[in-house]
Length: 428
Image (cartoon, rainbow, N blue to C red):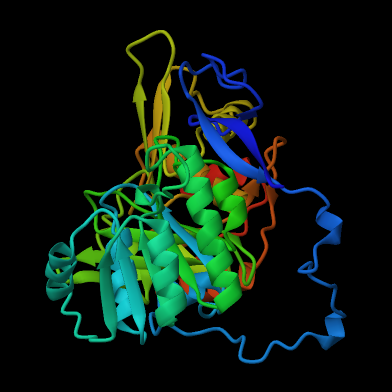
């Protein structure tokens, strides 16, 4: 006879316990343990429905080819198209454009089921009209019950399912509120099972927390096949789609979009976008950075000012603050630049986030240019990694960087060897 097994699960962290207590032993949250009922099935080895292993050579992939969405920047990031049966997670800050992007993807595909747990069907229709979506194959469902959604997917078998958002879904078999760790995990598991069984790709929308991670349990990112983040400033038009995890493609590619009144517009030439308002004053330097296989030219601005406090400030926007401290120490020690009483501010124009060491040389030259109040040649594009000894190291894919720079009219490339040459180049 089947026995009922009682388990108490913390709604805050997902910790399981065999008995109830007023405080979770893992996270310390009070009154967060809820009762879960499960079946304790014995003699599992005697079951006749156990799956049998299959030789890898006997597995046929059939029509398991990437489904192109027709949105080039989106396809680039996800690996050329959506893989049948995959479970994707798109996360980002509220209002950044996640729903807009997925509605544009749905417009370019056939037999799409758009499930919304946060908006009514009429609200989605209003957004579709603003985006001028004319695809009649998009079916809209305003529902939060994951069991009903799974039944509908199994019945209609659409080509693509969008669930907006996973934090709004709930499973009635678990007594906790939508958005809790238990609900997010169990709903994602059910949707994953449907996607793998019916070979239907499902895209989940997730909200980002203050620290930039996806709201809900960390296991959510392990359950899905790919995780993508839509980044950008809500008050600026640039949006960057970045892959964090992808079982079917690279994670170093990015897609560039511009948010307009009629939706997201693909930016096919991002270098011109980031340089279109460049003035060319002191403290401004152009560098070539790589994101995946794509080179970008971006402008780095620096400003130095005598500090009015005892301890100088070092602030960086779009660049690692710890890396900035290291570069300033090298300039002070090796290039004899008197920065001990200088506030230093670094800004990457366009809201771009630069992480690779190849932009060290551009940051250093921008600081030197601002400190001496001398503008750098407007046709100069620099890149290189700076070591602790002040040497300039080579960077990968230099030929692609030079080719992109020459395409946009930057004919002068630097060949400096150490930070002393940086100052000599500035005052030549």
